Amino acid sequence: MGESSAGCGKTPTITSKQYSMTVNGKSRQYIMKLPNNYDKSRPHRLVFTWHQLGGSAQKIVDGEDTSRGGALPYYGLNAIANNSAIFVVPQGLNAGWGNQGGEDVTFFDQLVKAVEADLCVDTRLRFSTGFSYGGAMSYALACARPKDIRAVAVISGSQLSGCTGGNDPVAYYGQHGTSDSVLNVSGGRQLRDRFVRNNGCTAVAETQPSGGRSVKTVYQNCKPGYPVTWVIHGGDHNPSQKDGSVIFAPQNTWDFFTQFT
Image (cartoon, rainbow, N blue to C red; front, side, top):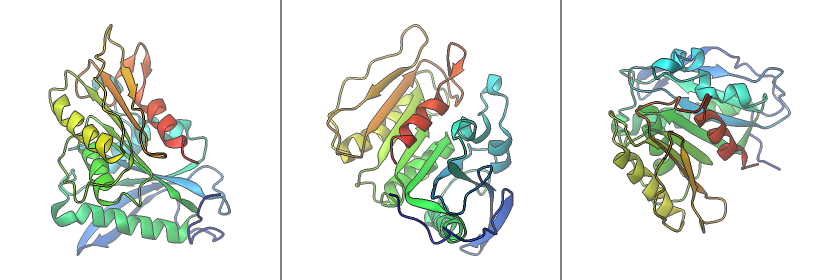
């Protein structure tokens, strides 16, 4: 059994819409998405989805043209979550996640507190994902809040939002293109390697993509409950890279998250 948040059993006041809160004296916005037929007695997964630089919470909700390097709505996760997850979609300051003085991590802290006071969440099943700057923010949370995040999925990320702490294990999924012209794949590998070490996994030689398809490496001998998966592809800076006709990040991410129950 999971650990139920204070909001379990309560008639919720939070619905699927945009909200504001004050963080360090600044007004911050976020969008909530509750499952259809939300059940106040059932603890849900809580998934944070962080936008890229120049993006917005609304664009995460609506999705963008994937043929032009945009992401599916909620990074494709809501469509396959089968009403098992609550989504939180924060809006960055200056359309990014500079995390000055840790203010975006504090934003996360306050979001968790507000959401879980009102909604029924399994407090052991909080997850974070994002593309580019959103991946960097997910990585920053893995570093700074390892006890509060069960797993992260970092899509084409780099260390842009800092890494306070960064010495504890967190289940880690990373994905990057070898032809990334915005954030070099070397940066994504550095993020991955921190959690290969933190999670006690055995380092392995990376298999390179061939024939245009992605290659998944599942690291071995990691600490129980702290797996690391790395997906490399030959493409550019793109959250919607395809194997054939299939955008693979959503299913890969969801499979990684839902191994935890």
